[in-house]
Length: 560
Image 1 (tube, rainbow, N blue to C red):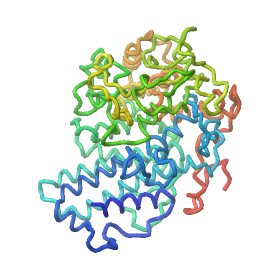
Image 2: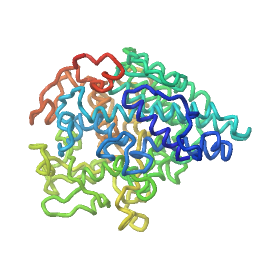
Image 3: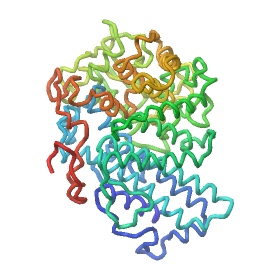
Image 4: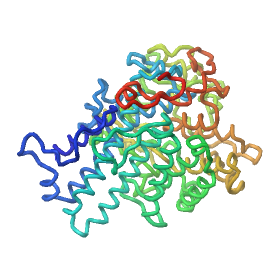
């Protein structure tokens, strides 16, 4: 198994770095003939081998590499910075009105925070590499199962089909960020001949290929939703991801697909209604969705399953300096001589990220730093000595110059949002977080449907109003009337509900507010008050290393 794992991870690194694979498939013999080969492994334990290889595809989203937190398959010096969730967070959250990173020792962060993007930015290269590393893992898994599935008994053939579907869903998530963040990029799937360089496709063509595959996967599952095992994906995750693609179709292809977005959201919503907050399928507690036991809100959990797509984390068995550990540690730390270990129940405290003022003001904090909005209940604000403005973003001096946006914690919660001390990690268990990373929640599906109605003029306005008020009422804020159903209000509500969930940049681009649209935030453009930047920054540059290896065309505005 070690040989196969090394091959999978090594192959993903080659493809991620911009090289085409110079090897064939898993038939490449290991140097040591005594090592396990695929034939030996499948012959000895076909189902177990398949399951372990599929786990590599999931692990590619959760950890830095096959040794957990201390080794990245991408070879970057800071292994934690190379995790999938964290590299995407860097692009989707740190470049927006949500958060400011404060530690610029690692090259490239300042340029992200101030929107001074360049093709040689190592953090952008890390994200591109991680995206295509995940794609490579999933492709090689599918090829391998197709090649060796004859070793599987008849009773496991259906499981093989499902495993392939799961890999396609995971691959589609990676492609979503390739399409959203980089636009025109390479496309490879399990049918691509090994050793062939990925062909660069237009953004629209990439969208069509990925969405077509996802639609086929969803259809193969049939009409009904059956919950997969905890931590795995199935039909509902595929449909939720399709909803995310459809709501962005206008940007990705030039042709909106709000009708498709509305329809698929209706299917998902109908599946969840009848339980949870006001029978909406939402959890009664917002903060419990981001606690140490939030797996209870995912598939097969004992509470309402608001979390549709999750990336498991475990403080003992699945450790990473990405995901929820990263989010907690970045927001926590001693300030003004006061220890903050009890804020997140996590030993790591980095003091390196604060909320930008524009995000903070969306929660309508009063002059004493309090808000009625439950989604910011845990934040450190002026009541704790933090300033709302971002007068500096440089180093430790910047911590406190901006509210600390605590969202994930390492506390377990009961279904009403009260801390469950008995079941919360303690002592040495607090080195890494137990909270799973939420990829897509039912709340996002509700918001997509609302947008489809208000912006796309499809669906039913009464339903859209009901959906948005489920979300606002759960948060403890004033419900809306029809007059409040505007594009700007929906964008702001998405910010309040989904901050930190790796979708903000995509939202801002879709609403014309990211680059060239007149909306500025602190330190955008490199000045305290913010200034507009050119519209070509609506896409990141394709990393120069990829351009060099693959001879791709660079995105407009970044040179050749």
